[in-house]
Length: 413
Image (cartoon, rainbow, N blue to C red; front, side, top):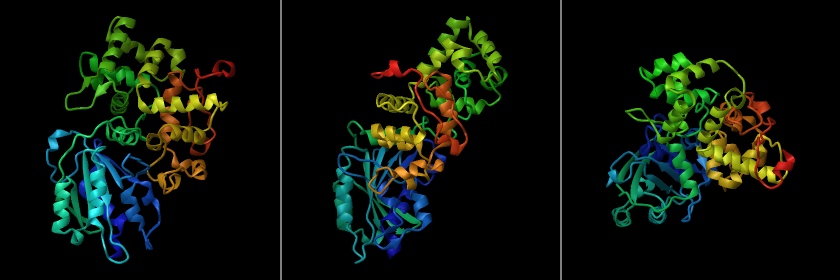
């Protein structure tokens, strides 16, 4: 049964554990880059299997590289499920070899070795290869077992128990970031001016209906403003919408600056439709927006990458150069921030390293990064250029910090 090679087993297990992952903002999973290959043990991996395994990333734990790393409670029975609201899950897949054998015990041992770094461990294997002996071993080592009956059929046949992992590694944190509401996607910042996100916090704090207030004084795209406010940590995304501590500071600033939230919203109303850089239009508000934006993990990664490039005399940098520098700092997070799910097949080699030639392909980059998000960084005074939605032009569009602070930066500025 060649179709139950490891990629097929892993795809079936992923679908069984995270059947609704595309519709859930609190679920996210990445497949290890070794599965980007076109063939596996002489078996040609179908495009459909590769599609189901996307996105890929290079996640290196101290115990090794899990075949799949997910965040969020998986489907099926999980013992002590309430012990972790967003558990980190490692999955090891074992497929049928050319001789027909399946080393399920080895997969159980590998999954068990991950438990010091994750909350749940699973082994996935062809169902007919899972014996009572291996199930007993899995129970003893607290490893879940997913039995795969076909490329589209898998069931959890041994539930795992949630464990308390220690401090998560950099790679795990990158995946956890994408499983939260702060994930950076092409649709993350649908409007490209920071006042639209600050304005949502003000509308929420004002008297009356939030949406009506926002549309009257900020822009007529309430859902877009709300999305950006959640991403930047100004508003909590829940059944009862409310300001975070950071969002409350925006309201306090508005009252201090303008006397009331309503007066601040009137000022925002006057700014609507103006393309003037925010640092020139409202310098104090832009300074506050920059402080808010610096709380966002992708911002810090990009600033760190540009600082390192500026110190090396690279100013301005191009998008491929910035992506490479970011990957040197935190490759798992950089992959999540810069590259599309489909583009990672081209960008990441099987060992997780970057294919430099692929970085010159515009399609591998998230347009939201080099367009709307870059515009945010320009408006708050971090970057010197506002970005572009032209994929081809994005490769050469300049990236430079307005005020780098590294050695020699004053002389180059």
